[in-house]
Length: 162
Image (cartoon, rainbow, N blue to C red):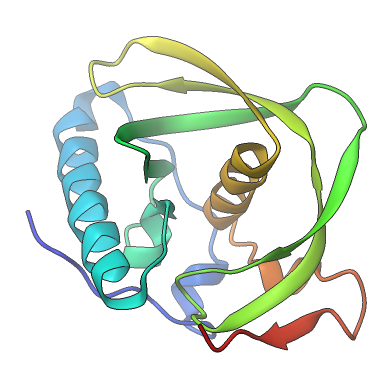
C-alpha cells in the first residue's frame, strides 16, 4: 500500500514482543506485508541496501517478517526459529532501524523456520550463512531484541559510512 516510516533505535515499540496473527487476521497480515515490501524498496533506493524487514520496524506489533532479495520475496507469518546445530560465526550486522551503525555479534550458521504463508499454509525453509543470520536478525525484532543488545563486547560497534 505505502512505504512507511522505519522506527529508529530508541523508539519504545522496537523493544516490545509482537503478537501472533490469527487466521481471521490474514488480511491484516497481507496489508502489513505490502507495506513492508514498499518500505524496504523505498529504503533500498535511498540507502543502497536492505534485504529484510520485520513488522515492528514500521510500528506493527505482529509476528510478520518480509524478505526481498535476488528476485525472491518471502512473507513469514508467525515464524518459529529452530537452530540445526551449535555451529556459529561472528559477523558485523546492520539494521534499517540504525542506518550507518554496525554491531559485531555471533549468529548460528544454520537454521530452520516454520511459518505460515499468505495463504495460511504451513511452510518450512532452511537457511545457511548470511541468510541464516538475516532471518535471525529479523526474528529478534519480533521479540523486541535489537542487534545492538547482542554485541560481543563493548567494542562491538562501528560506523559504516557507505
